[in-house]
Length: 164
Image (cartoon, rainbow, N blue to C red; front, side):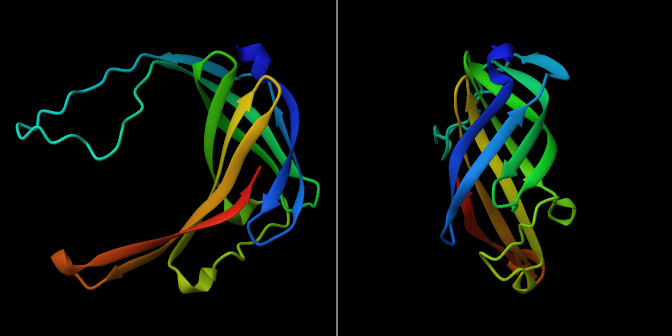
């Protein structure tokens, strides 16, 4: 499993604002591996109300690896430390919040107006299999409290950056 995830993969990347490029993802040798045994905690709500969303609580491997994420157009040229989550043989998923102030590539948030929000975050998510990589880059833009106390509100806008 671990050996099948390491290595380089390329894929076409399509920008949400139009255009395309090629992405190269290079997964390095694992720096740590953990087996996580998950236990579903049953809801003790006596009303019998089911949760609004399913919770993924399968046993899995967590594999810490160096990951290089580079686009041919130079928008991203990132060297990251990520944790892969593998619930089945031959594929692993990752989710990583990008540090916008420390990006090595030329990417800048243009999908929304960052000055109109208090906080903007961009995430890289992907699935790596033995022969392919797929994923997306997306973000959230948050407006912080309007009002105070129990009447306060916080809102967030989701935006798509790219898919690959």
